[in-house]
Length: 160
Image 1: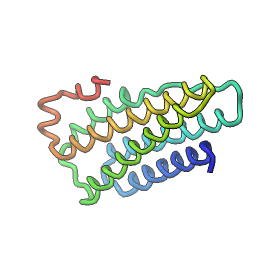
Image 2 (image 1 turned 90 degrees about the vertical axis):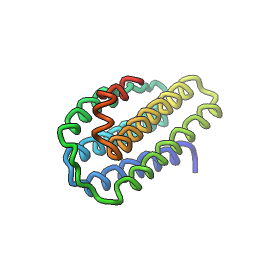
Image 3 (image 1 turned 60 degrees about the vertical axis):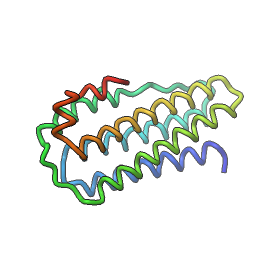
Image 4 (image 1 turned 30 degrees about the vertical axis):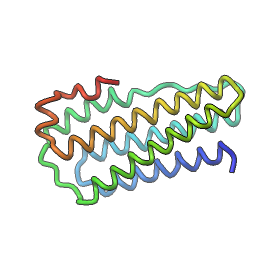
């Protein structure tokens, strides 16, 4: 399997994972976050497709953390969240997916000879890192929502 096919597979599986997880959520705010992540994976897929098919391609950085800050603000108003007991484990799987994707893109960035390809792959590393950071904050929020809100006032997402 070549780098593109493997990357396509990673992004498609990640998107499907987030969509499936969103379907299982009974909280609309959590669904929104998970669907945002799924949409991001589609953007990554399209970027990789452009990288494979075109000489001139680019990748626009996303504002997912900025957008997420608003969603976390909405989530604070919905602190008493009832969620499936599997949700923390499923979110951990999502974190693991993001870490594997990040590692894969970093490794491939070191292997490619084209400067443009290397730049795009490193941007994908950054994007996956944002997803990881978002998911870590989500897990932290779900494990202790009142403490997360009171102590941080959502500055967790400003660190990036």
